[in-house]
Amino acid sequence: MKILLTGNPNVGKSVIFNRLTGVDIISSNYPGTTIDYTKGYFNLEGERVELIDVPGTYSLEPSCKAEEIAVQMLQEGDVFINIIDATNLERSLNFTLQLIKQKKPMVIALNLFDESKHIGISIDVEKLEQILGIPCIPTCALTGEGIKKLVMKIKDARISDIVFNNSQRWTEIGKIIDEVQEIKHKHHSFAEKLRDASVKPMTGIPILISVLFLTFILIRLIGESLIRFVFEPFFERVWSPVMIKLSGFLIQSEFFHDLLIGDLVNGNIDYGSSFGLLTTGLFVPVGAVLPYVFAFYTVLAVLEDLGYLPRVAVMVDNIMHKMGLHGLAIIPMLLGLGCNVPGALSIRILETRKERFIAATLMSIAVPCMALQAMLFGLLGQYGIKGLSVVFGTLMLVWLILGLLLKRIIKGTSPEMFVEIPPYRIPYFKGVIKKVWMRLKWFIKEAVPFVLLGVLIANVLYTLGVMQFISRVTGPFFNCILGLPEEAAGSLVMGFLRKDLALGMLIPLNMTLKQLVVASVVLSMYFPCVATFSILLKELGILDMLKSATIMVLSALITGGLLNLILTVILN
Image (cartoon, rainbow, N blue to C red; front, side, top):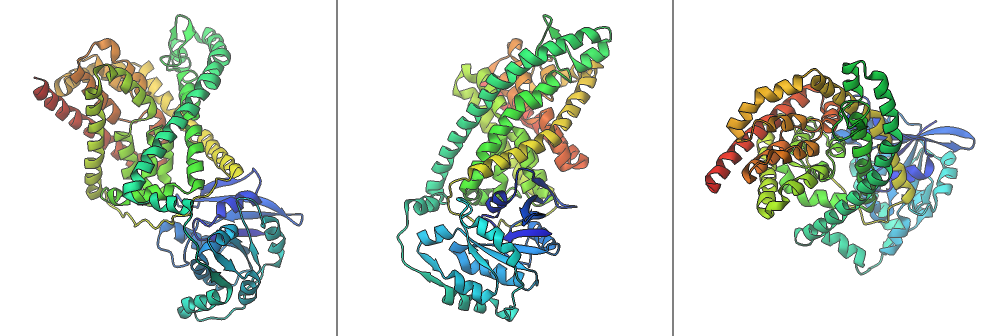
């Protein structure tokens, strides 16, 4: 039996799905699309049944790709579990009456029933069940109230025999509402006032800044703690001895030694500079990126379940539309400030190719990750705010200008954002853990192999001397256009592996403030690190990734050249 969990967005479908299913759940794309759906299993009277969490939709007359997929999936189910928002019964009934026309057995979960009572809404459940001819069960997904009864009622799912004219659906809904719902006046609570304040620019922006500040503190604390106390000790105490022994076996084959182990520093493995596939290649995605990915996904899951992210999307929707995006595109940008890898992964929440391309390109060019930010502060901090302000101000300006240009250059559509703003809710702990585990499992399975492939290709080029050749050839060009010493070319080329490490390679060159600023901007913009590049290659495809990379390189060179001229005039 295949059971479909369906309903409007933000009615608690995912939480109920997590309540019903076990750990063994699958998140994948609907065939031929990038639209995600989740599938799991649970026992129903001794039978193992399949449960699919259908993307939320407001109507069977789709207005976007996600709703088109939802409508297609509804044709495949045997039974519907229709999740209704008890705090917004009128809107939910519009979708419910459309589902009834599908003539499939259905059971209704009146979710957020506790919250409806808190805000003064009283629903006569028995009367509603009698009118619709479908079992109706009050539930609270957060606490689990009513979930067991919901499962027991699945066997009683029925095809409704209610008769109504589809063109008069809203009239029928009005009659049902009059019979089953009573609303009493209730003053706004503190939580409701906070919800309103979160979407108004005057109050919402300070709240956003505070949330971002707290988010980055938590991400850095969690990520750096995992690196310092878990991953670095593992690689140094457990993995390094194994690699040193392997190095002894491979010492006679210089090519394979350089490829797999890389250069030893005083007979030891240096994961920052060895660049072997099994040393730096493994440490980058697992020891350096995975801790931040875990931290980001944990904080992201909490913010999602809390109901805050839709508010951020609504606040920035106007400015994002000027760049061919909508408000939800702010999520890759925010994630990219911590680590570009989860930022690259999150572009799939955007519906069209145009949006995904623009978001990925802007994030890769103008959103420095936390590791790169730390190196920027270390490199330019000695000069005070003047050096850092030029770097970050230039990146922000490039982000705005390039976004405006790409909107006009890139063909395709950017649909309007139809997003429901849910009330603030306490995150469901088990649901957060399950969500983080699913995303981590996907990252390890899908992303890490591509990262290793990227490191392998870069390492082969480095071992064969191609990287060194590129550095020698491009050195005079960088000196002429960007005003940088020819030795800086090696750092820029090495930035493909790790930007923060490449920035650190500039320190021994004793460059001036102007050169450091130009080099920092160019290195931040010109190309994503191998981890991000590998993810974007998979998400965008080869052709779009080549287009994006071309834009990155040209933008970095043009910006660096102009910045070099401007600073030369100002400082002289």
